[in-house]
View 1 (tube, rainbow, N blue to C red):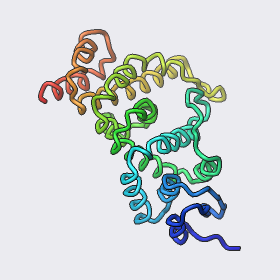
View 2: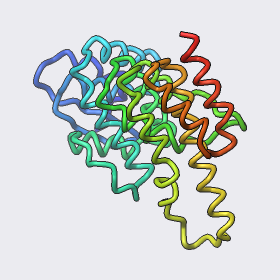
View 3: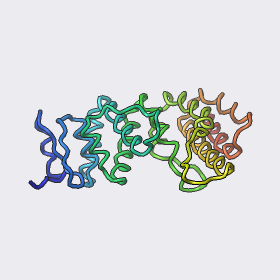
View 4: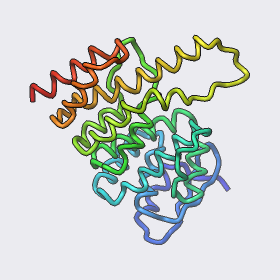
Length: 249
């Protein structure tokens, strides 16, 4: 029996109590009908109109969608960072987990982008720690750290994110220092330290940028203290800019 593509089965979502059958890369997945889960499946669609419609629907559902969105982000991060034991198992239905696991790298990347956007739109305080975890390891496109989708989401969440952002800055060096290197690749001690320093810098610079964009005066004592104590010299311009932005508000 030929499986119907996603675009042809979306009419099923309006029928209560039915199962939703989806074809991703010719693999059939059956998930008990749930409004949020159905919208998540639609976000995986390659059809832009379908994915945008799903985004709009999740926005309409509102805060009720947050637990599922957090679970989806956990699942995507677990697929990428499979050795990260700090990630708690997601509570997604097993078949939805399989669907996400079978998705291509680009499909997962697009899904992650939409989910992060939605968590920011819904101002999900519960997702702050996970958004920071997702934000930190992304590679820079240039020497200057720029805003990524997680950072924009954290700015939308605003002041409730400030304590976790400060904590992330304070603990970055220790956390990055615990990185496990692939033993099959020979690296000198200096090379390993350079990688750790770069990761620490990326993580701290991103959180500092977000603090500046949020503009909460409660972050000022921390930033001014950071500026006046020993720190990575590459962070100085980011700290000064964040302080300036907060004082301008």
